[in-house]
Image (cartoon, rainbow, N blue to C red):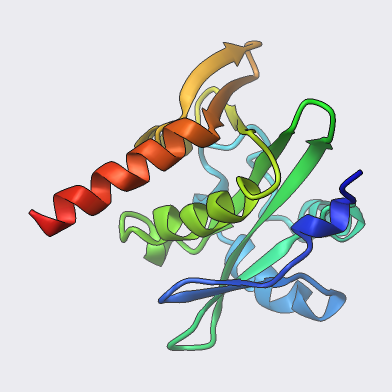
Length: 181
């Protein structure tokens, strides 16, 4: 049986490193998170407040699959965080979310680059990844749709998107073919 630690890794893209979050990351992550704009479409819009963010951060540290602190490799600056959670070994699924990025990186392709390396890793372990997104978080909904995720459920507070390994692999192959034309 695969253990949750298989998600507890360090990942890199051309522009970003995703390192396991530690207590030492709190101040740098809070510098990003204390901007109310980061949370304006999120169901918990007050996460920019220190006590609320502290609880969020503590939950990240206690997450059995770990949590990633995202750094810009050029600048060395912390730009956000994301995590895997709710690993279902028998169902071969995991959830990916709790992502927040510095607004400076919005619309830059950073989220897609970061999510692609996370998905590449996840799909070495599972067959399907789910994303739980607030119903009013249209920015995040569009972002996961660009990755090929399909809306598959909703409960009024959140919508759930799913992406299976085959669809992600097919999309990636299609993009590589388009790049060579």
